[in-house]
Image (cartoon, rainbow, N blue to C red; front, side, top):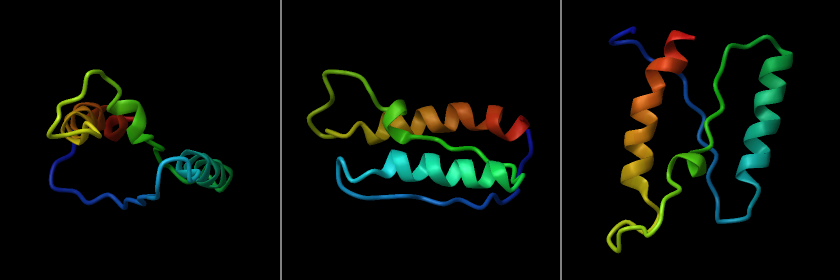
Length: 77
């Protein structure tokens, strides 16, 4: 695992149903076509559990912990 390195990040945001996942997938395909090493992570896949806490209705805390847990695997790849 690399430590103390920076990684460029692109965040696609918007309201529910706006097409963030579709835009992310399209960007990922363009980067792949260009031969650019990258990872596309859909945060919605990291926060799906129910019932969600009343103080965190979007399960942001869990999604953040899950991202931290899987990032070393992406970094190593």
